[in-house]
Image 1 (cartoon, chains in turn red, yellow):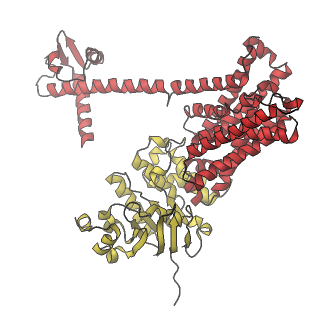
Image 2 (image 1 turned 90 degrees about the vertical axis):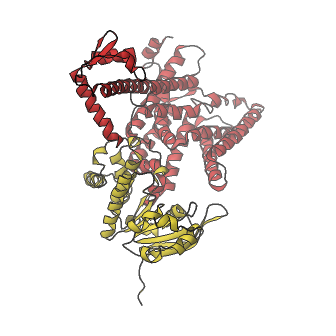
Image 3 (image 1 turned 135 degrees about the vertical axis):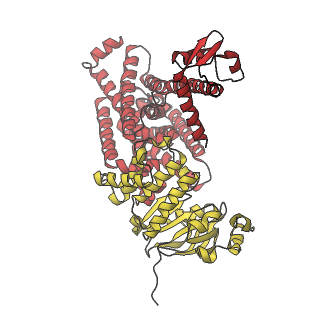
Length: 375
Length: 246
């Protein structure tokens, strides 16, 4: 199936439509909530939470013996929340730093989860197969009810976001100050963390434990490049997330043996790469271009003011001088002289240059400006 | 004898992060309407004292009263100016937006700022001389400008007490003068201002009240009475005469 065939089928084929909708909604909610994680400098929290969810999935299966995806996700939710809570208490009560606590909980919970998975494989239960799909995710297993759950969570988190918009904004920027204003920052903190955990747990079935944090971070990191407004950033992150979901699903559906989760994450990574290079304000490319332009302009200005210092003591400003005498000044090149001539600031004749009336005035202006700022 | 109500009254306040106390048994009575400097060496607990007064840090023992009542009941009477370095200035927002945050406390939960809040915020920006930068992304402001934004944010709270953590840190002489003029204006309007301050030379010129702090409270009172060699030596451990009497 080619990409175009996919887009023709997506509206008629039930499975394709469900998967596409599911990954799009998932991408949107992850982008939205991921913005909070990124701005709070808790980017790695998502990684720890998703890994911490694994033992919950395994335990839910061991205890109930059924492989109902909602049931398993409740298990994931509980152990994800326990992991998050432990990370926060470790940081608060011991002298360990945040990254150490994250790494500790991540590997501890993930190791325990893997242990339980091997245990389950030896259980005499025909249902056991396929639990390991939660490691890397399998979008093909999404059904309509999963999409409904995702949509419900997305809607609720959107409502919460709009309702507590100003409180969350000031909390993200300055938590201590938020506390002094009389807001309960603990409540706000729990609120935002619970929704981040929920989004991660929802994505486990599709993207999997290992890659889930990328879904949270990539759209947000990409979106930050395009705007200086929090609201716009969250909106763009949601769009990037949704597009990653749709394109990722399309690409993986149009090729054989390409699992959806990793492709979605790779598409999100392309968004990040593109944004980091090509965004107008913060992007590397335009910053580099601006840097070179400024430098070139500065060089021209410096050359012109240097010439001005030579010229200003002569009665005739257009008296020609040898290019040679510029030699002990390092800021000029043949090119910059040509550039100055093009702007009619100087005239070049063979090995000599002469300043024009226009150039003299321009240089005098610059010279005085620089003189003033030096004071 | 009637009991006087102080703007801030601190009793037996002790704070510790680990085992070592950062503040030990502090008693402090700050009358209303003073412009007070908190001075002391690095690690004296100056910022911690301010944070403990604001309830950001929970003390091990002791109490803090704002006009005779606990802080939680007086949030609308107190404005805080944190250290400039305590936040990430690359946050996606504008100068005006940061100043508007000062109105959030009065608004309370959920309610959004409207035209009225925008107007008071623009007035505060004008007061600190930053009106032309209102739509500037905050990371593009200089250090002194960022400090003035924080001051404007506290101004819109229209509080009775202002607690400021090193508002002159890293600002140039012009900005320092502009800020101190606003602080003096506030004091003349009857407000109480508590400022963590490092430059001992300017204490007599800027402030009329001073607290010496070095884990323990050394002295607190009018500058003309207690800002002397004895207290400076007790606080800093060395003779500071040279530094002050230039």
